[in-house]
Image (tube, rainbow over all chains, first blue to last red; front, side):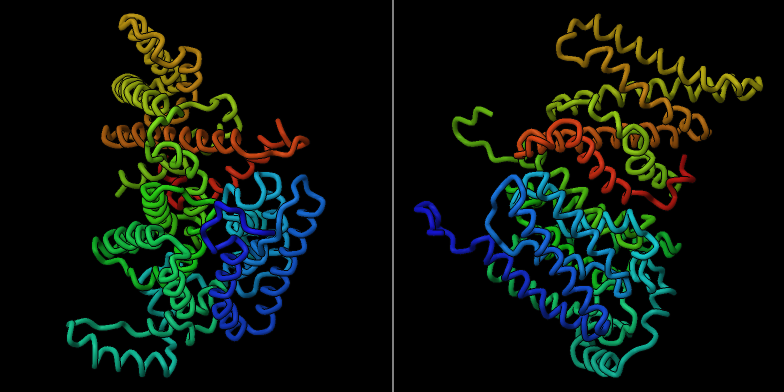
Length: 329
Length: 191
């Protein structure tokens, strides 16, 4: 289709989705290397089912919509927020539900909720036992964290010693043992979620996306502040450690937090339009994610926090919109 | 810590609207933000008044005289007292047009019956205040959430065969799917 005269931005929805898929590819690759053939099968099959279902819905559905590869992105994202040993048909069922919800509630580009997270919540509600990972990194106490990070790789030992000896000693700080493994995903043998295996690549991808302006900077920044500040102040309370004893580093690099703030919360169709709306949306999601991760019954609260804020987006767009001349609404 | 537990529990997961009356959301209807704010303020005052009355009666009369079997009746009577106070204020101030309709208001106060019973359990007045205010705050959040859902429902292109009740039920299902994730570990003990 030719570009219309008023079209001034080269970033089409197809190009945006392909960019995001390319950014997540190293993470998926590392998850496959870490989890083996089964994880690779889950990722590829979920993406294929998503693409097929979307194609069928676009062909037979009430609206004829152009192919924009969004279904492939949702399939990939959903597979990354799954535990490595999840039965393969669960993400399939989740993505089919999500495609149906998208088709019935507005169609492409008008999703009420993040489609990958809708599928994830559907799976959580339907098969909670299968969705619970073998090793729960989220909401863990200090002693649990220590035991999880006890088996360090040689990379962690070497890198931690080098960082503490050459860089952090100048700042009078020390990197705790096991955290290099947590960031790189090398040493942890059993990940809670597939995305955790490629945290380093996830960070690298987000730098690329932020520099290119593909995702708005307000969401990662204020989501991080809304989450990290309460974690630092109140994070130690559930374990009886008092104020200002929360483990911010661990909470940020574990679970689906990084994937959430950079890829899930920034979904173009389910985020607010205005800058103030983006700030409120991200801050609310961050604080809610902290509450749910610390005291929630589910293993991971980041997804629910984003979904809850997704519901409030129309209200934010209405209340926080910028007043313009002759605004008669 | 107990106060914080109560606030979070009643704000998020023990909120009557969220957990028990979600299916009635259609009755609430779409409202503007100003109406939500006004309604929440009035409900807040009513909750503190009715809750305080019930709490006082519960610990000053029912418990000392072994009349616990009258707890539910006292809770309803306290709510009725708050409701009639609202009606009287509405008439006496002469601002009937700008304040919520009495029938609509009665429906909203009935939703708080469960909260009121939970208020009477604790002897600590600070806990009663925390529960009352967090419930109203959570209720306001629920109204804002439903307002946002109604905005979505009004502006999206819904297939003709799916419009009406199927669409509303599907939407409520999605709302439940999200709210089911807001359960907190201590919510069962807080009430």
